[in-house]
Image 1 (tube, rainbow, N blue to C red):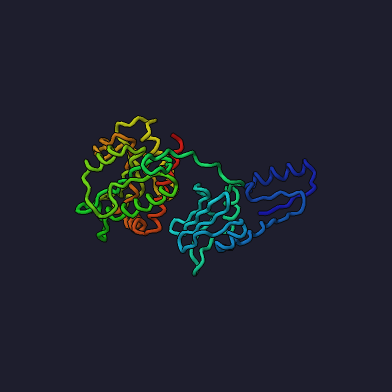
Image 2 (image 1 turned 90 degrees about the horizontal axis):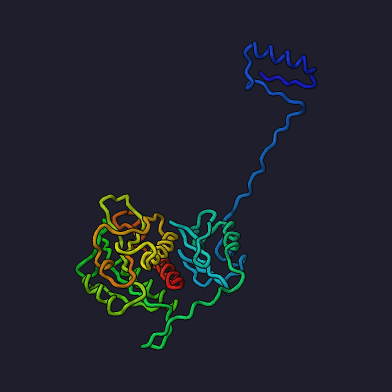
Length: 329
């Protein structure tokens, strides 16, 4: 029952309310108003139509330096913006992830992004060029100055395929692709790289350890992909030596690399110490980490790991973490 009461003497109003209560009329059945009812309607939100990457570049005064169907890079004097399409559409400004604001996907030949991404990128951009990098250490053999030296160890190889996917895909091939990409990126950033293998060759574990011992790099990084009986298991893991203290160089490098990978890989399994005696970690005398980039036994993650552009993203994440650690030492 709806009753509208207006301008009624207080005593009369009290009597009416008492009568209604005695009659069993609940408060939820009444609406008391001392004026006119007005119904407010929330205004409709405008539809946020997607824009092309070229439109985004013009709005931000950026130049497209690497157009591509899945990866696009834009740049100005002070900033580098990298945009990845689905399945994990994402955008980075100077290596830091920014909210995408919606789907990033292909529409014909163009990569379409949400219009809200313009403001998200603008808010993260530098207004002036970043400070110069630290002066690299000299290389007594070549005369070139390096920020540091890293040994990249692509796991398995040759007669040892490593973990196998359901379709016969080999861990050894995936990690070699990522390692080569990472080596190229590191060299371009002024970091000297040594590889335990650069082709499909079998290398004994002890030979990998002795290789690191001979060259005494600043960091040893062993690169792998994981496998499990549970085909739903997925995500990356970074392992450090069991003997490593929490503030050790290995632990610090592992944390930096994990921070880079969490921007690319959907699931993080964190920085850990392996239950088994991983020889390349426990016997290597320099700071060392072992990275599992994902699970080849997970169908979805395996499909990603086989894609060259995804391997490049993983390599970039590793390189970002290694570079950040070398600079912070």
